[in-house]
Image (cartoon, rainbow, N blue to C red; front, side, top):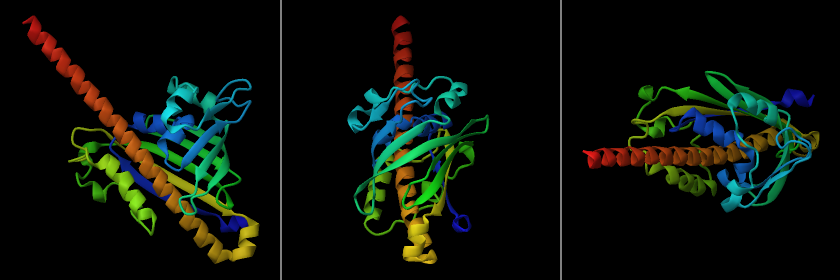
Length: 260
């Protein structure tokens, strides 16, 4: 019966960064505690392919997350061997109650093709439901994008209550360097689809309609906050890469002038 109450929440955003940058961010699970403001810690459960035999990866200090992560990237074709089937425990802060909760996750899909890259998480315990989150990254032709980012960034601009200020501040962290947003840059599209089935306990306690509305509201807020954090992180990384390339090009030109 509960399967009949299944619902999905799709959100698609445009990120001014290459596919590789965005894919590196969402597939680097140990670094979630430094990318997502609502993520407190990440722990890879023992005896999973992501860390080898009996290994454990923990990442909880945001400032030292890059030092704690020990899951190497490697070639794209080797990632499924390490990530697919791996189990993780993620501790998050609820953006509504400001309380921490743990979510056990399993990587159930990992796909890399010429046109898209897909990563799917599944869990039996998330916000009073069993759910899966499918993340798809696809390359976009930046020349076809409107320079006005307000109409292209997301189909999820629905600030509400106390969370609107947080979303404004998260967006401002990455907006100061995008005028016009896509000029001379690569861009990609990130689609997140959250599919949920509520617990029978909550359905009986709150009623069908109230339970579904509450779950959809909480899940959408969490997804929007996470996607804004991913956007700010990826666009910041891409800006760093572009600036580094400009510095290298400038240094090369200076050397050529000195030789002349």
